[in-house]
Length: 638
Image (cartoon, rainbow, N blue to C red; front, side):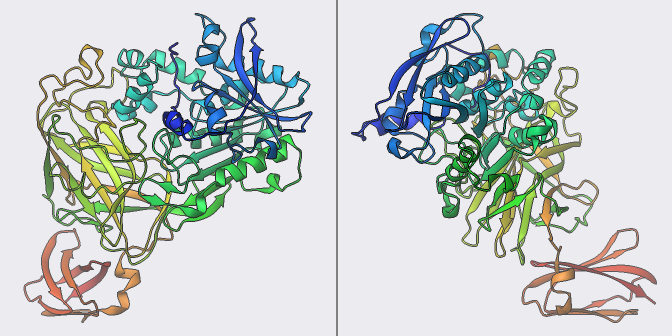
């Protein structure tokens, strides 16, 4: 049965069949059926530890076949050791899926109503002590919110992973650009969203209705422990919803909610998932299984009423990648950050110094028939890599992008929050996309993906049909791309990099650059008379392009780091300025007058003397820039 709403995605069941063939032992649950409000029944497996006559229950509601748990074992680190568990598990198939397929019909109760019926059925069983919690990732997390919304009397707490309840236009069309592989994967799983999405590719009244229907923080009346990952695609749903339940759920429960954000992918294929040490090409050993440990602590406190200190834990615990440490905060974004802008320069550098030239610009070609490929990131399709992968060979070796990189960092750049890319752009076509990849460049040259974003230019004025319009070829426009929240420290010796392209395919739909219908024939991935676009990013003092990073305690340039190594004299000066540095690398000295005009520039190493006899009397700014940063000082010509 197909469902007309979002299922966040299969988490690990794409590998279950192969794995089950390798496991000789299997669990033997009690097979039961759970009566729903309409009299039909859902199939359920009940796992009761040996010797437990009555106890708390963890409910898992799945559209991915409850039977697989018999072969792969139970979650939360229990696996096949059921008898060591302090909990009874009930795993039920959703209405219309697998063992519950026969319960489906048009107009049947929602998954939330079915969830309420299941919770109350559990509470009435002799083996239940009346306390019921829920657990599960992705679609299994989404249904927990829907169940909590129905407020079952015996629902005690919920633990959704990599999931938020919202159903939003931006989830499927970020800045107007369809998430192609995401929707393809949902269709492959049988949930058939593409027809509805293709019929509504701009924000309209249907989207407004659905969005309002699926954002209900005030309805979460039980403690909620949300678990997410910095490489997951649901970050921008989870963080806002956590803030909302902390402020809008019933007063008695607001302080009971908790959030854990780890260095994790969504999962769904490959061996990486929430809680594993290996993520993409990186390893986070001290993050392994934190999700299980803290989830059990959460359940022990609320379902077993154990005084384990859970009520004193921080509201938010998060993993600071790069430093690879667990940190905490009372709210997100974390406090203590300040926005630092790094400007795009003509030479491919990324610097806190504003460009001085007034005409610089860079142009690259984008061919829809040969798009920049997706390589890692928050993907879902089974044939794509997921999480942090090196962009150097697959993406950055191509000629269809611009690459901007900082000098080697002389200090840690501690990012907590959402980066934003502000560009002045132009194109010779009627429509095109701009795509951003933010990477952490290691000393060995690896360019590890942190996160990404996209923008379809016809949506520059908004996402409704009335807002959309083709662009005027070669006219300059603003393009702002807000990247997903993250927590990463770009370590000393690393570099920060921004890749600018016009595709990231198949993660996002390929723009045909024609300005015509985006999805001809309601096909979400088709090219009709595509055109090659020449796309320009401006990198000058008048049209600046830059990325703003929310950094903690970051000091910009050698003005604060290495000023003691630089001597510029005399001040005032007459016919010459002498510059001496202790920096054993090439530097650039640039002189500006008080209205910002560049009147002199020269490269040098170690020391130089500038002939200033032609300078008019007055005030000047002398800038010395090296790979480490920049220092600016005011000087007077007499």
